[in-house]
Length: 96
Image (cartoon, rainbow, N blue to C red; front, side, top):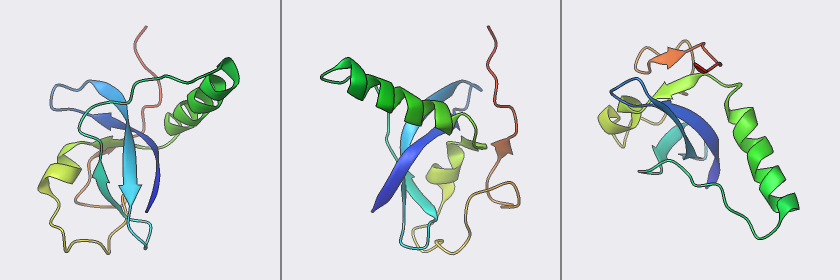
């Protein structure tokens, strides 16, 4: 199962980075329940992890409701700006 970091927006409009898991067709089908915590055994590994998280901020934001409302059989439609079932945001910046 493939995964990457993605920014999810919760019901209060707050953004956080989660691990998102994809099926064999590249469609997101699950995510971590809580945002990821940044930790590593050394600075080099920490920087690699942070770079992957930074890359997540360049992709469309996924509304967490996408995973809550998604039916297990609904695996054909990829997440993206044209997916009518997914609310995404083009905003890649944060306040502050």
